[in-house]
Length: 127
Image (cartoon, rainbow, N blue to C red; front, side):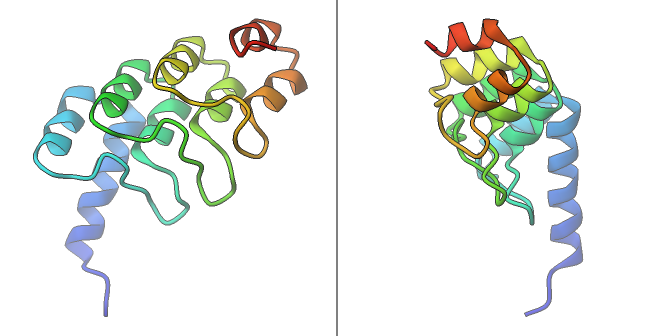
């Protein structure tokens, strides 16, 4: 079965909305039926992309609508480890509030915080 170019273009637009932190527009699509855990060909979800690009409000909205805050991509990276790597404290807080586990993933958010000497995050993680 051939991929549908229109569907691929639509999915690309959704991932771009997550990267740009277009919370309200993305919310409308999710509430209309787009899966909150939609992932791309690398396993990056909408929430992963929003987290990595520093959009705490978008992360909170996606989690509120059912996105899995701990879902790892195909490389074993979690949204939380990405937020720690990018030094995004508001996103880290949003993910912890949504139930993300700092010890999941490879490397985990805990390992990433240790690697970069981010003691504040380690305190938040209870380490």
